[in-house]
Length: 299
Ligand SMILES: *Cc1c(COP(=O)(O)O)cnc(C)c1O
Image 1: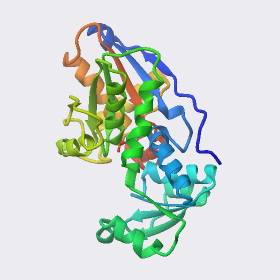
Image 2: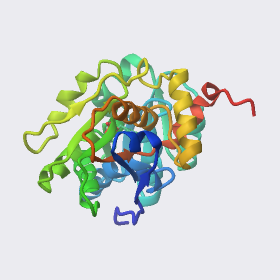
Image 3: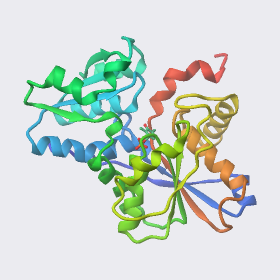
């Protein structure tokens, strides 16, 4: 089956008094609407990875992730849709949460491995699937050249230009792809990436290795909220407030931090008056199901 999704990812304007006060306009690219499970940037990354697998006659995707990884679920759902078998090698002891339940629903085989052996992904692949000539290695998070290529297409879809684009960064592949799109279309757009992990400067080499040419971009490293998948009461409040006032859902691991950062940077006067800013909603909304108790709803 040809690897293609006919998807819908519109750009919508978001209104807020803070934006008016600072003279900026904010828009959001709704990659969360692409597909419920092959979500957001994970579809963009998987597109060329799956095409490459197909071109090499590989029918079994083997990939890696933590027990809540959006990438595992996206791979499971994409594998099911496009006729691949899939194995997910999961970091840590055996658990069964909402994400892994949905992976299993899509037919993904799960293989749990301790944190030590998880570090050597190539070794794990060879150990378990070295004899399987149909097996195809897909790195954690879909981080690779093909992944960045898929993400660059986000720019091609835009019918207007923006002064600034902002997205969350885990590996930085999505940000790098978008920068490549900006370069390709020779736009003057400034790119802002919000690392969701601590010490976010470490992302730079991961981004730079995928760039098609020299490019400047801004890494705003102060919005990790304590580290990967960590939250604070202020972040939780912000996400509740944003979701209930816009009807656009955010989750705490990536998009919540990105949007919090955007509001905070606007309030600090980081953007010139008259700026048109595009925030990328990278999807991954089911991740919130693993963090329900942090939201303090009494039901
Ligand atoms: C995986 C993911 C990211 C991080 O993407 P990278 O390309 O690794 O930087 C951002 N947002 C969401 C919702 C994700 O699931």
